[in-house]
Image (cartoon, rainbow, N blue to C red; front, side, top):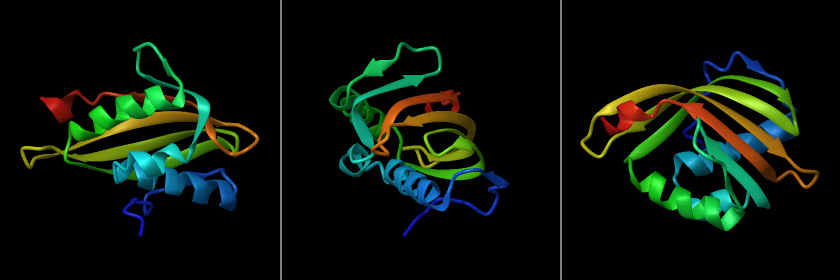
Length: 135
């Protein structure tokens, strides 16, 4: 069952099929389930956070996420808007983090996702200030 918060989703320009794919993708992130998330990625995927250099390759991305997802206790995406097409879209969200010290922090985030003809993510670019999560 999805823990995504969709009650505040104002605009969703994706088809029903692509939206369902994206909700499952976000559920895997919120569950911090690297194996489930891997199923959504193309072998040649790139991922970039803010101004950091992009990392390339599915295994490299997954290795980075294994460490990053352990750095906080939990995450729930509150979806606000999804703009674009089924193969290239952007999400505006409020991300609700649970820290290891028990405190909760919400941060705004924008994520761009591109998908190939097979429906796998080929590029993910995330713009968010997560510093309050680690303050």
